Amino acid sequence: MDQKLLYDVLRAEIQDRKIPLSLGKTCPMKCTFCYEQDHSYRKTFNTPRTTQDHWQFILNEIQKCPSGKNEAWIFGGNEYMEWTETFLHPRAMDWLEEFLDNTDKKIVIFTTGCLPHEKINRLAERYSGRIHMELSVNTLSRYRKQLMPIGPSIKQVLKILDGPVVTTANFYSFGPSTMSEDAKTISKINPRCHLWMGCLTPLKYIDEKTTALMRQGKKFLPDEAKKIYDDCLPNISMIHTESDITTFLNRNKILKSFDACELKKKDTVVMAGNVYRILTMFRQNRARFLYVPNDTLGGDSDCSTLLTFKDIAKRITNQTQVYLPKVIMENTSNEERDIAGVSFDEFKSWFPRCRFKVLYKINSKQSNRKLYEKGYLKNYVEDYLYNPLSKQFETVPLPN
Ligand code: SF4
Image (cartoon, rainbow, N blue to C red; front, side, top):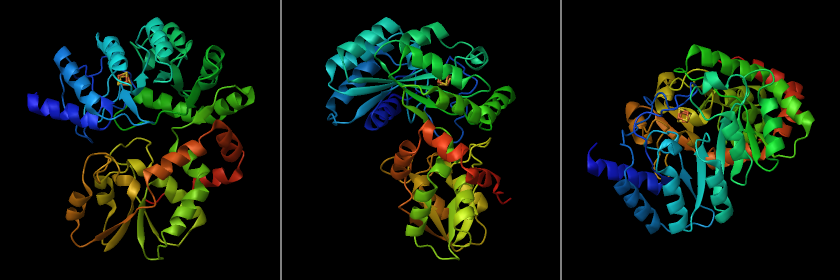
């Protein structure tokens, strides 16, 4: 890779508050559910394995950045480079420690748990309040070997959980007695960490066996969630991956935002399936709802935030004016680009005879806030599973 380009990519990651360590292509863990398997929809740069020189450059650049009060740097997640399990890099732990020693910045670690538990828990004690770990437990169930063939052992994951470092543990339903059993096990060891649960959504490139398991997980999510609800665990428990549930639970806010846009009956407005269902139920004929499937990601994805301009282009016919929610073009903080990196200006140039208007009130700041406000397991059980309206919502047909 050209050296100038490499350093530009590292700078761009740092600009976004990412600590850009690389293992090179591709992640050795080979989790079958990995969403990084297909990058055809977004541009990633083939950065080489991070060397000591690269690290020196990264640390120097980070030290130049002012420390925001509530700002945390991401360790183990990139925007322009591939995501990998960063701790498989033999120097990752040393560099993490150097970062903590040489800056006053906070850090959020994303990992599946491939790191020495004694050392990370010691660092968490020494740098109290500065390290938050989002531990991707994924599953402790009988399906773990199938999904994470060379992932860290359950024993290793539990040891990391048994300490001060883990802020949130993510894990999912894959069928009966999966998510609910994991919640009990994790809570027993660590009653303080937040439990982030839900399902994994099959995308078009996920293999058949894994797709079947993900769908089985979705089918059993209600039962699994009710069991955890009945267990009254002390941990804060959230369902945070399901766009249908989030949409339904936030229906009043969605309707209020829609009303605030003051659209007319003949105005055409773009949306993915779940919002389409809500507006069809409660605001029928108040505007023309242009349903756009998430074709780019494919599989079972159904989320307005993850729509691409290419997806929308496929659905535009003879409209002369179309309204787009801002949420579609918020991939980067400064420019209007979709998740595939296509700019709004480029998209507009594809349809010279159509005018596009942005609904600025429908933005990700608002939707992310809502995700947390109503994202509790309790909300799901009480206002979704026990609410007959949710059945009606699930059966609203989507147009072809
Ligand atoms: S560890 Fe993360 S990046 Fe690597 S294969 Fe697994 S899910 Fe993908």
